[in-house]
Amino acid sequence: MGNDVLFETLLRLADNHLILGHRLSEWCGHAPMLEEDLAMPNIALDLIGQSRALYAYAAEIENQGRSEDDLAFLRLEKDYHNILMVERPNGDFGHTMLRQFLFSSFMVLFWERAQNSTDKVLSGIAGKAFKESQYHVRHTAEWIIRLGDGTEESHKRMTAATAALAPYIGELFEADAVDQSAISAGIIPRASDLRGAWETQVRSVYAEATLEPILDHQAQTGGRIGQHTEDMGFLLAQLQYVQRTYPNMTW
Amino acid sequence: MVTSEQQSAWDAAAAVLDPEVPAVTVADLGILRSVEMTGGRSVLAKVTPTYSGCPAVSAIEIAIDVALREAGFDPTIERVMSPPWTTDWVTTEGREKLRAYGIAPPVQASNSLRALFGDTVVACPRCASTDTTRVSEFGSTACKALYKCDACHEPFDYFKCI
Image (cartoon, rainbow over all chains, first blue to last red):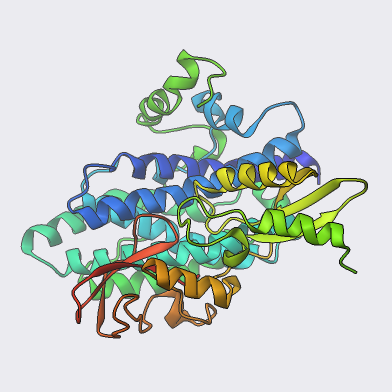
């Protein structure tokens, strides 16, 4: 296995966390209550912190003189390899919470096993991220239950969110040739092996939330190879604006 | 063997205060993992972040770098992720300083799921009552949760277990 597989694996993970962290940060100042205005940026900070560790290591592995900031801010849309779920617009609060719940429930399982990665740096990052992801699952699961089993209006909105996000679930468990190489080398766990445990967790929360589990929808994919939804370009325009306008600017 | 030179390097680095909780030092929190002499006046200080996204990490690294330089050393700061930081590393003295500062210290034993999920009894740092309620799992910084005391009615921060 060459360094390019490790680099690409780190980049995909980092992109997932940066883009979702950015989406969550859009809620800052707009959350329905003060506690949530603290919670969402806190979760975003965890995600962006995890992405920084991954980008910094990816830059080191690539060894082409690019920094973690170059990787985060100076690539074109097709060069971002995050899954589509994380780039979808926030929608309402329930939609944001459900997306986070689906993603974090997967990441808890992923990081738990990645602690045994043959790559020592990744296993270190996993150890920390595993603990943090558990908080994210707990917090978001509470909201799914409260809103799903809430008022007629909140239940209606949560039902809409489950349908809207369902097409993006399958991509979580995909593995292309790059992933296969990384799995064979023991760098990352096989995502499809995590599906059973993930579904058990999600189904139990959906049941408590009185929501119909829509989990087997035809999957929309392409993020891994840079084919994004129409919303990605707008997201990057905001994310990259300062670095593009004032190249090499630092705080 | 710990030489006197190594001890003075440790002492210089260990005295750095946490920028967000200036009542405790980086040694009290267990953020400063080790300080080694690497030849001449060169030292290697290893630092671990509390949370991946802790915005204070860079400030802490710079502060340790400055403290070691002022003590006459030539420092290199290395950020280590593994093993991951845990609240179990907060020293007994650190816990007492947190309480005196008005922040409830982490309840011991982070490896229990109950502690991780905050189902533990947190005592009010002001009146010591255990009649407290969690207001929010997330507080002013990544490492804290918001609580209120139902006895003395003071809101307070809890340094959460991880």
